[in-house]
Length: 115
Image 1 (cartoon, rainbow, N blue to C red):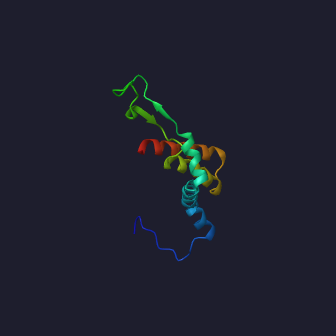
Image 2 (cartoon, helix red, strand yellow):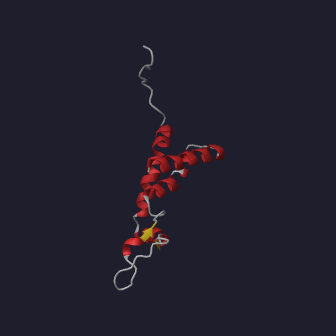
Image 3 (cartoon, helix red, strand yellow):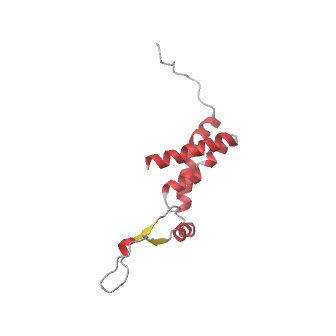
């Protein structure tokens, strides 16, 4: 049959199985560590609210309203955790530096374009 492979009775080596699931384990580990209260406070401190430029909206008392405050939680987002966890998988996959940089660029593009 064209395009079909015979099923193999040979099992994959254990090392290959571990390498295949390692990125998922790293991401789960990163999200688990991020839930520890002491660790959870660090990204919250990195997120700082800013007023929108040139948008001076005040209430009748002259106080700035809360709706024009912009927060950018770049460190506290899931995508950032994934991007921080996955470079470790490059080491597990035994990639050289050049391939690792290309792979990291591909991941950033994927996250940027999809989300």
